[in-house]
Each structure stands twice: as structure tokens, then as C-alpha cells.
Image 1 (tube, helix red, strand yellow):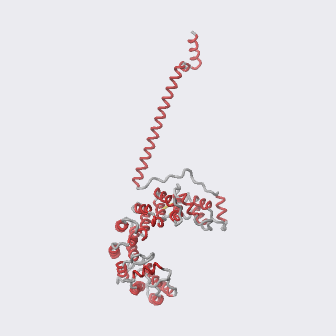
Image 2: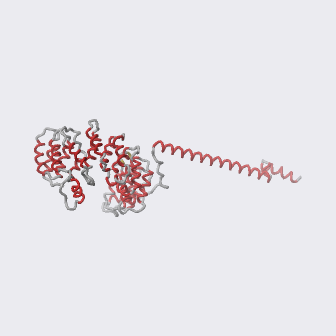
Image 3: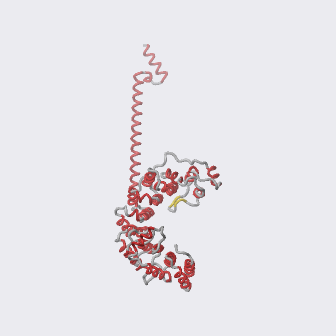
Length: 444
């Protein structure tokens, strides 16, 4: 009877009879636990599905775009070591040296600057302050590189772009720390912005000469969808020291010369062919230069490459006689026009001297090899013909005058000044004045 009254009392007090029953308590707790476990399992499944979906979407986008995944941001946004007030005080004091803290603050200050294919907006206040800050004397000339390498994975493309420009010397210099190059390459491989990646590659010249990993990376990126990346790769592949260490470089550069969808890239590729020192490049140059349907920009690049097969700086180790003969054929051509002869690369003819200073060992070595076929008198006569011909393009004529100056033909330049002055073309006055000026200057 007592137990029954207790049960009734409990029901009246709580409103639910089972709440006072120990067995019912256990049952409810067990039920609640099961429901919580079910909820946890559902939540975990949902999170796993969302994660898998995100992973799949990211991979799909990366595959479709041909890009790697976006480089992970820093765990926290990097904070500038100096306050805005301290930066302003530094910029105001022209005698204050640029410290690591000041440079880092200025670098981080461009985070919000507009960034596009032209780089960081030069009108941006942060960019102006960085430029002004770098006019100060440095506490340590290596400092910009050591600071910049920390920011190669910054979330801001503007900062990564600027940092890559400064970090290259720290990464690949003669006294670079052992891990600096690896950090630079790690960031470059993770980079997804084409303009920033091109900036990275433009800093790899020293690294490519001594590091196979850098050369392999460049060889892969030369097929990148961003034209600026392909261009920078080809410029690097146009370095003789690098080209000689890259298996398949001639075939790859030739492919870009003939088939790249961008005319400017094709021009850069054709110029780079000379670095391979492959004799098969000469027929390629001839076909492209002499073909009347060739676009002028591409012809210009090919003529530059042609000249570099036998002279220019750095001097080719094995000057090409065939390259020399084809160059002379182009310069001596009777039918000159605004397109022929091309002007790009013509300046490098000025390196084809026959006498060199004692310290110019590379020049002496070049002439010792090239003198078996090189005729300076013939070159001078051909260049003089271009300079005097009012049917030739202005740039080709202007470059010809400069070449004559470098080759020590000051008297000839004085005569040309008088000859050109009598011509009626709109550019005659300027060319005549240049010839007169060069005739009074010493050869370089």
C-alpha cells in the first residue's frame, strides 16, 4: 500500500509516472543515448559526404582548368611588424635604412592593391610606398630576398608576385641557403595564377643552370595554357648553358616555333632555337624569314635567333658558318622593305669584332673559332648598305648605324650622315643626326 501511494505521489509531483521509476530512468537514458549516437553518426556521414563532394569538385575544377589546387593560405594572416604610423615615419626619414621589419611591412601593405596581367597596380598607395621604401639604403642587401621567401605562399597574388621577384636571388644565388631553392620551387609548383607563375619562372635562370629539378619544371610548364608562362619558359630555354642540359630541348622549342597559338610566343621560341646550337635550326630560320606570308613579329624573332647562331653575347661556343652565311644573305638582299631585313638581333652584330681587350677572353676565343669564315669587311659593307637604303625600315637602319659605331667605323658614319641628310623620308633627319653623333663617339 505504501509503495502504491508513493507511486501516485510521484506521478502527481512530476507529471510522468516512469520518471520516478529507476528502471524507467535507465530505459529513457538508454533511449536518449541511442538517439544522440544516431545523430552523431548522421552528422559524421554528412560531414564525410560534404568533404568528399568538395574534394571531388576541387579535383574536377583543377583537371578542367589544367591548374593545381589553390596554394593553401597561411594558418593566420601575416601581420606587419610595424604599425602604419611607424611605416609613415620611416618613409618620411630618407636617412633611415630599410630594415627587415620595414620591408616586410611595406610588402604586406600591397595585399589589397589591384593585380592583373600587368602586375601590381603602380597607382596603388601600398605599391607607391613599397617603391619609396626601397629607395632607402638597405641594412643588408640580401634582406629583401630573405624576407620575401617567407611570403611566396601568401594568400594575396600581389604579394606573391612581388615576393617572387625578390626571392629568386636568395633561392638560387651563389651563397643561397641549402633549403632556399627547395622552398622557392615548392611555391612555384603550387602556384595557380599564371601571371605570378611567370614571375616565378623569370627568376629561375641561375637555378636552371645547376638544378635538374628546375629544368624539368620549366620543360613541363612550357605547355601551360597561360601564354606568359610559355614565353618565360622559352626565354629561359634560350639560355645556351641551360639548353645544353635539357634533353629534347630542340624538339620542344621547334614545336613552339611552328605551332604555338600565340604569335609573340612563337617569336620568342624562334629566337631561343639558337641556344640549342643544333644545325637543324638554320633551315628553319631560312624558311620562316624568307616566307612572304610570315608575320613580322615571328620573322623578327627568327632573325634574332639566326644572328645568335654565330655571334652576340654570350658568344656561342661553336659559331655557325651556315648561320653567318644566311645572315649575310638577308643583309645583302637587294629587295629591302620595312620588314626586310629584320631589326631584332641586329645590335648583336656589333659583337663581331676582330680585336678585343686583353680582359675579354670570351671575345678572343670566339674570334679564334669564327675567323675561319667570318669576314668583317663584308659585314660592314652589308650593314652600311642597310643604313643608307631609304627603303629599309627605320629600326633596321637605326640599328645598323649603332653596329657601325661598335665596329669602329666612325669615318663611315660621318659620310652616312651627309648621305642620309639629303633623303626626303620622314625619318631621314633623325637618322642623319644619329649617324653624326655616333661618328664622334668612341667604339664600345
